[in-house]
Length: 278
Image (cartoon, rainbow, N blue to C red; front, side, top):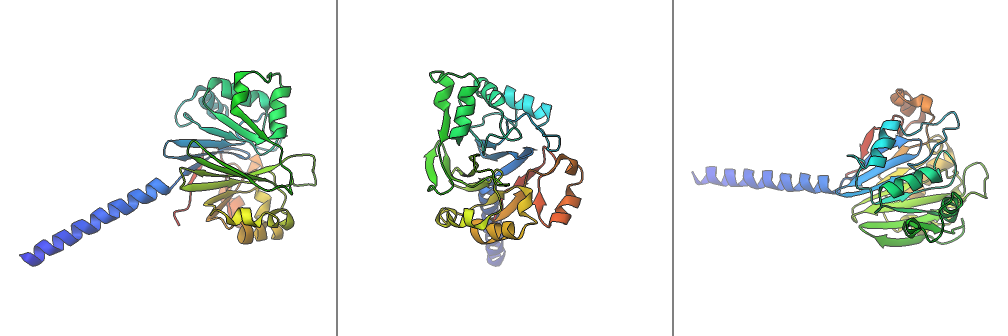
């Protein structure tokens, strides 16, 4: 009888420990939802952020955020309600349109926007005056490729960024690689339209080593470029990598594109991934 009791107690402890372990995993894991092109929403508990979600130009080849998702975001409808912060990589029309971002911020008066000085200026140039209360929620940073990373903590977010030159030799564009940790548990890095130039990343090696990245979101061309592979493997060293900026023709053919590029990709707006549990 004592042996039976002991076995029951052991089994109970095993089950309860597994429940605790699984709950811890669920608590640590964030979910990334693909919105379109490089637009991604990341959710951890009650904390939500979006990258490059407000843009109006597909340039005829990239996926726009579907109207149903845009309308839900504007209305603050689940699961797109309660966004804490918007992050913008750069000012190109397939990543950022000032008027859309302004409309969203007016409809959602607690959200903050973080971007480059060029993003800030685009909002001002769209007709928003400096003393408009909205501008108190817009944060623009004048950061160059050789400048040290910026970093700060706010409202459950640990935020850092470095300027990585835009692919295709466009030095006049401020392109930011944002690294955001939600609730001090899940860290996501968004590279914007960074070019796969090793030296542009290696000069910031200490920044990339300073915090473990759980999920990296590079443009898809990093996945089939030797230098891109070196950057992802030896410098960023994320637990998982999901390519973005995939042409819209990939929608519905994600597995084919993933096989061809040899890595994971976001191809269909609305699809999701959990951050790695490692």
